[in-house]
Length: 67
Image 1 (cartoon, rainbow, N blue to C red):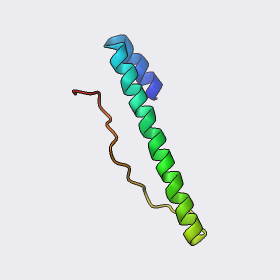
Image 2 (cartoon, rainbow, N blue to C red):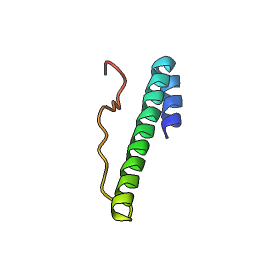
Image 3 (cartoon, helix red, strand yellow):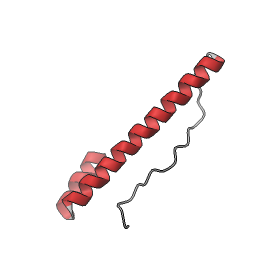
Image 4 (cartoon, rainbow, N blue to C red):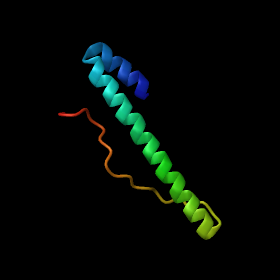
């Protein structure tokens, strides 16, 4: 979905801005995935079961700069 959105945004607007937004989105997903993995491993080692509690990750911007 991120790639499709970037492709559409690149055709309709500034392709450089669309590429930067795509990269920030991918980096944000990777940070969330990494944070959840660390939390689940810590909970599993403490309780011997994976945690289902949501993980909050701060500092992720979802809109283009200056928007």
